[in-house]
Length: 325
Image (cartoon, rainbow, N blue to C red; front, side, top):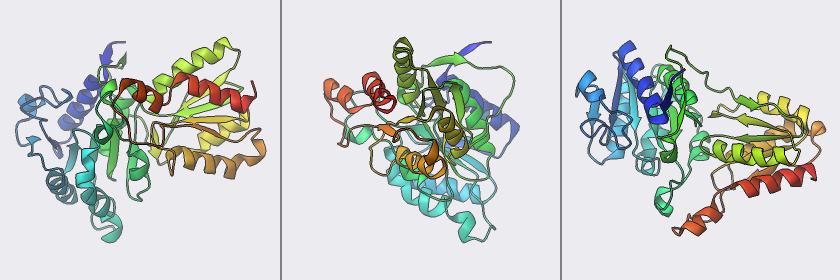
């Protein structure tokens, strides 16, 4: 099986869906002439032309609104935000238009569209360019929120997102665009709302999503050396949340650690903790432990960035806390 980069997997998903369905188009800043800020759309302007790969001004609210209107009228836009930090400029269109249109119109209008781009920290980018808003968007009825952790998942989930009849928030990572993974050449789709059990285990369940899965895998190697057999779950989708897979896992391991690159208050890990105690309280031998980013704006200094983000040692410490190891 061939190995390709995360950005290439996204490009293949976009290209395949645009070839399959003339209603699909890509719109955003620098997606056409510049081939995308992160080269996800490289070569797509040449194949599909300027009517389907559309460069926009630096005006997120404007082009998000154009895309919502297009989706309401039968097209399937893919909106690229250069970063989800910039999506805050367009959040009125995302939350008050796209997410609510089906309900407010009594089912007469739908918004089959995807908002995609990078999320979270990518090094020394400062407090305004390093934030995670997965929980913000997941708090909104009418939206689906997808956060892939590798190129294989990214391609299969993006194709499903484009075909979905609801608006989808598709969150990537600048630090993963060069990540290489095995991706089949034949077509495949991955279902939205279904988590992936990456590794089965018996002692503790570790849950995460997005680029934090790489940190979890490093922590798991250290845990194995210490004789702790962890079950690892990649959520893939944070709305809808696959509660069934999480509950089935903790019924087996009796302990859970959730790793999330976001602030702790009202986070995805908060919701997971609630749902697990609600549905599997009698199986829990310890409270759910969380490893999140520190509850401060992200600093600029590299040493403080490292202290801010979840890391291997913090995950190992949380696992030892719940397993009493």
